[in-house]
Length: 244
Length: 248
Image (cartoon, rainbow over all chains, first blue to last red):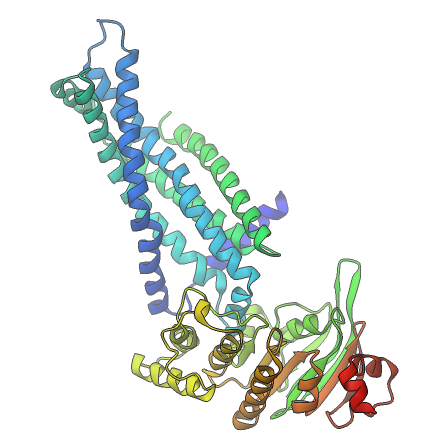
């Protein structure tokens, strides 16, 4: 365990060195914006729309008392989406999509000697392969999460409208009720931390893959499991630090 | 010239290299031969710095490579080209992008200059007009030739080839051997080839070192290898029916 953490820290040290060539780094960064960010937009929006709808319907279903106003549906949906569903659940989805892809890509490069080829050329492979991914995810994931929040809230509205449980006016009033902009800041900070964890931990497991195709699969599984655990752990820590 | 002095390397309890010393001459094809598991790949990885030897020194033209800090090693690595057993081409990049990659990383050439160099290297390995192909679209021989083109694109002083003929038919293997030999003489490089292919030894072995059980057992050239008075070397060289007939 201590050895693994030590190796991870050393890998990060290599990753955060100055890139060998700025123009190559920028090109890689643009590629990763596309690969890690834009290509994840579809799944993020799809899941967000349904998550928002489900959150709204479940809240409405649980409001039995006539003393609780129906505006609470919009309020609870907004709070749960901004505070937890979008930053955490979407990040967990991205662990499966982006994290496993990073581990497989770098792991395959390792077992087919492509990383050795980079080393022989005098390229710092950790910096060349992992830093653009970390940077791209830390920039793109908050944007994805903002889209996710918007689409989730729209999904909540649609679910309320189609089911006839809550009127548009009640839902909108709930969305605006006691809105604290800091919750958005909190969500973005969480997302940035999770993006760092997803890319760096996945990169670490990919880079340390030894063997063949089976080992690439094993590394990918380890990366997804451990990143998911770390995300939940850091969710608790950040919530304690920022909200409590 | 590359010199190795008293190189030893172990993995846990298993000692793979035992006090190996040798020199690899400039402008020559230097072959490391030995049966599978003899330690020749580990020796090559120690030579290029992918493994750190437990003891001993690796010296590139009077520069002690093995004792340099990692950042300083990068300067020597920029003078090194390597052909890996499987080619190790970047599979997300086209042939042109693969060959252009070291040029983009380490030179300030314009795109047109880089493309000119890529075309020159591709012509040198007889693969003109393959620029837009992906590694998945190449045959084994083409992959090796693209890997050679990538290795020579930055005019390296040292070329390392790890089993360049593995997985190739004898004719293609001969073409690759001759190509490496021609390039070595043309660019006056120090070339080190790791092989267990006797055809390569007899074809291009200007200097041959034989590794057995992690030790250096014999040094000579292609003309001496068939007449050497070394039992272990003879067991290796005359292991096949073809070489036994040749001896007769």
